[in-house]
Amino acid sequence: MLLNISTTYQPATDLGYLLHKHPDKLQSIELAIGKAHIFYPESTNEKTTVSLLLDIDPVDMVKGARNNNTL
Image 1 (cartoon, one colour):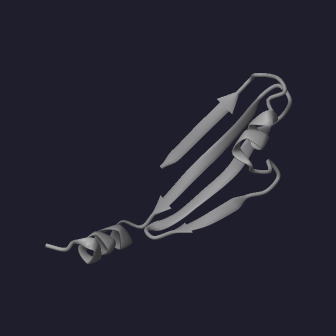
Image 2 (cartoon, one colour):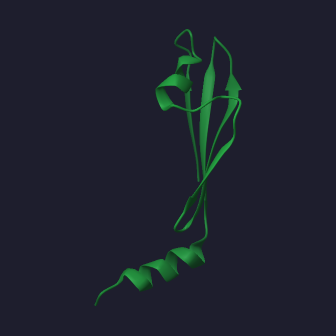
């Protein structure tokens, strides 16, 4: 799944301050069911876009649901 958030409010680079993420740095976070990657495909004063890419492993997701089921 890919989520993009863009702004053209100037200075658009303030989006990085709002999200506490540096536009020049790719960040990856380990999740119980995969990984999340946060990056900026576009970062200028006129327009900034931040992307959240969820790399979900469906097998781990199903296994986790079985392990969390208390029935």
